[in-house]
Structure formats: structure tokens, C-alpha cells
Length: 256
Length: 158
Image (cartoon, rainbow over all chains, first blue to last red; front, side, top):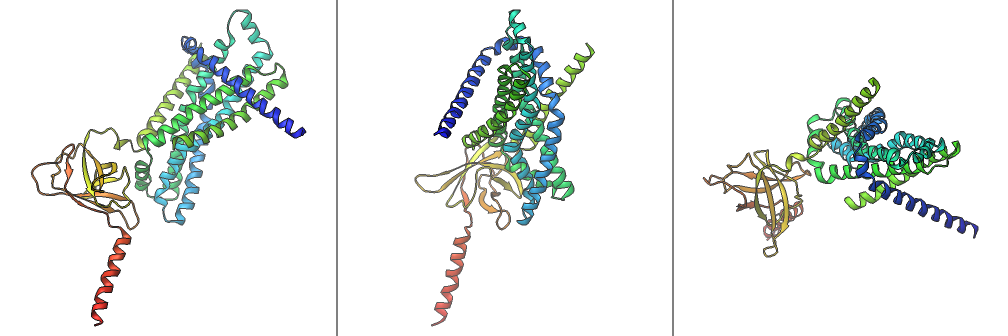
């Protein structure tokens, strides 16, 4: 009985969080025209959110691509089908691994930074100070960060995919001596521009919105204490990871 | 001042790099070349297309000259109607060309092979290829082989 009640509260909490972040998203969407009037603020945040994640994304992309190359080669060589290695690497990167791994790294690298920054602004009453000066903190602080995240994510996914395919190419062709022509021609024939590339881009945009929304939401509504900010940062990572994986399943089911 | 300049430069670099990466992936790691090319479409009907798929190659003398863009079933004749999207460069293919469905390798992908005829008029948008040769279905071949083998032995036993 007690267990049932606890489950009930967990479900209620979850619904409340979902509803609150949905309403927050609506509020943000309404402010988009205002935010676009000050692109300088957005680009400053694109630097913080996107450009600072660049090295992490590129190194991870390279290693993911190289691992795909090795694993794919080992499995495919059992069926004497190593010429399909390019397809394996490119398809798994474009359709799944690129958007998902980038989103998870993004949540860890940029999402936590956003949450703790906004949370600390709340804790040190900077947000309250802005309100005193009749500056809307959502418009001035949250909005540029949100848009920067949404802009950065597809670009980061593109970079991740490009570096990943390069990594697969290095391992497959340079190390394992898969034929270079069949590597690329298999990619060219089997990776579809619309079905594979476009759906990957759609995924990356959705993940960008979800991850950044969770990050700024958790930061904005963090308890204004040291412990509260640290909890909010943890929640950002956990919730982003769960949201990305769940959304990934839904999007995959819809698109393929 | 100097620091904001550096930040702006790095941000600009990041944005450019992102778009370049997306562009490179879209152009060099997908089949973009088979889309949006000015070309012409011809149709050919086959009694059996075997395992032919959309986006399969159309080749002539081993050179890719187009792609299969659509496969449909004719509701009256129950033939497969295959639409071939031809590359615009190859606009002087005789209209009595034969289209056959071939297989690359023993178990490989199936493709449409064209062998040229001798006509002076060329295929153009909407043309229909008259002479077609259907896919060889392995099961049918084995069936024919077995029945052709068993006939002489039964007649020879008399």
C-alpha cells in the first residue's frame, strides 16, 4: 500500500515536471521575436555552448567512428562482407549514434554549465536584481542560452558525423585495408539523403530543444542554495539522458 | 575588447565548421547525386523483376546511366512497370534498346542492364522500352533444369 502511494507520487511528480517544462517552453517560444532583436547575446552563448564543446565532440566522434570501424570489420569479415563497412559506419552514425551520443555529451558538457550558471544567478539573487531593474531574466538570460543550444546542436551533430565517418574510414581503409572504392561507393549507394540524413538532422534539432530546455528549466527553477544548484545540475544530466533516449525511440519509430 | 574579438572569431569558426560538416556529410556520404539531376524518365514492363529494388542502378556497358525511381504493378496485365530515371548526359540511347534485369555477382544486388539497339530515334521523357528481359529466378531455373533432365531419361528408358 505504501509502495503504491509512493509510485503515485512519483507519477504525479513526473507529470508536474513535464507540464512545467512544457509551459516553460511555450513561454520561451513567445519570446523568440524579442530575442532575435539582440543576436549578439545569442552568439555569445553559441560560443559558450557550442564552440566550447567542439573539441569534446570531435574527439568523441573520431573514437566512436574508429570503434564502429573495428567492430564492423570484425563482424562483417565473418560473412566476407567487409565491403559493406562504409555503409555500416555511415548509417549507424547518421541515423543513431551521431544525434544520440552528441546529445548525451552536450547534456554533460553544455547542459550542466547552463544549469549551474543560471542556478547560481538565482542563488546570488542576480535574477531578482534584474527583475528589480525591470529586466525580464527570461528574456535577457534564459532566452539567448536556449536559442544558442538549439542552434549549436545540429551543427555539433554534423561535425560529430563527419569526424566519425573519417574515423571509420581511417580504421577500415588505412588499418584494415578494406577497399577504398567499395567503402565510399557502398556509402553513396546505400545512405539515402532524405531517409537517413534528413531524419538525423530532425533528430538533432529535437534533441537540441529537449536538452537545452531541460538545462535552462532546471537552472531557472533551482533551489537558491548551493545544494539546490548541485541537485539541479544532476537532474539536468539524468533527465536529458532519459529524454534523449525516449525521444530517440519515438522519432525512430515514426521516421523509419 | 580583444577578448570579445577572439570569442567572436571562434564562434564564427564553429558555425562555419558545423555547416561545412553538414554539407560534406550530405554531399559525400549520401546518394545525393541520384537526386535532382536534370534527366528523363522512361518506363519498361517486365513479367518478373525478381528482387529489383527502387534506387537500383541502371547501367549500359557497366556504366551507370540512371536509377530505378519507381516500381509498380500494372493492374491489367499484372506486369511490373519499372520507371527508370535516366541521367541527362545520356540522351542518345536508341529507342529499341533492350532492358534486362541482371544480378551483380551470384547473390548480389539486382540492377537493370541496357543493351543498345540500332534505331536512329532516341529514348526521351516518357518513352517505353519495348524489349525487356525479366529476372532469372533461381527457383524457376532449378525447376526447369530438373524437368528438362528428367524428360530424356524417362523417354530413353523405353
